[in-house]
Length: 106
Image 1 (cartoon, helix red, strand yellow):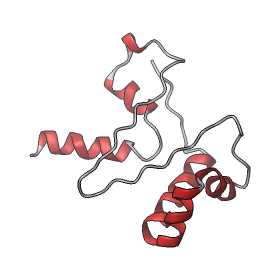
Image 2 (image 1 turned 60 degrees about the vertical axis):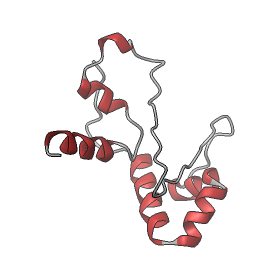
Image 3 (image 1 turned 90 degrees about the vertical axis):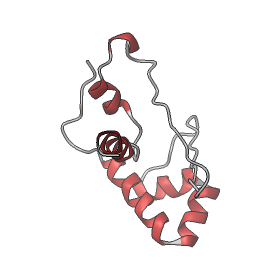
Image 4 (image 1 turned 90 degrees about the horizontal axis):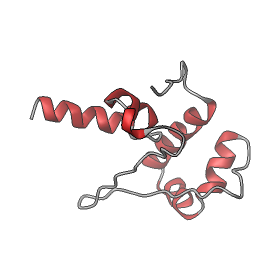
């Protein structure tokens, strides 16, 4: 079983704020798309490790992206639906909830 975090981390809060600002501010969105490490580092008050690659993808009216979670640290054969949802990247959990609602109430 995957341990769920009891509270939202500071990084998750920073990413949520970055996403919100990028949605409402075209210049900020452009900066995020151009240099996500810089923008996220500024938002969290700490530089992103040079060994980590950050990619920002923007959905359009004809293109949607699916992000698979990193599972290298768990036995995937034993994961429940709730465990998988707990692994999902920041920003995708609400999308999964919306998909579940659509499946139940088309």
